[in-house]
Length: 152
Image 1 (cartoon, rainbow, N blue to C red):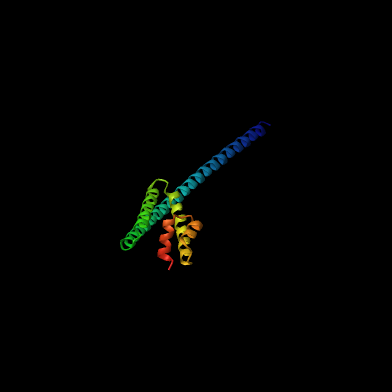
Image 2: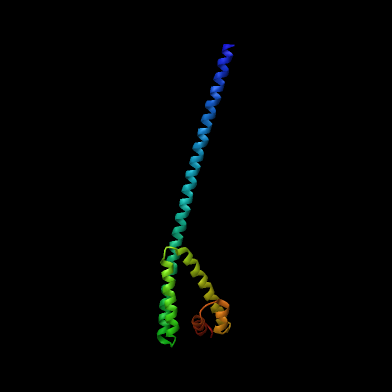
């Protein structure tokens, strides 16, 4: 009977030891999975930040090209007041893009870009500037410029 008692105690101790080892391995695996997940999230965030920087650089380059084009167009036409207003708007947009909340400014620039594309399509379809202002919500001076440039 003493042997059976010690054997029972030994089985119970082994069972407890096995449970503790299993619990430790599960804990260690969960910690490893958490570390892997953190590393993956950091990698994705780094990739997103890189793509945002590239997008911001593309926007800045496009704005510079637009500014040069507007200045070259304004030098030969009587559109100087309209062109000056557009240059000021480009400067304000560039300042907004350069601020820390660049991602929200970037989406606004993309929205403006699609609005102006729509306005250009309307001008090509011979819509008057007033109608373009009503449909697209842009300034009258911008609509007049678009009609003059694309309404042929």
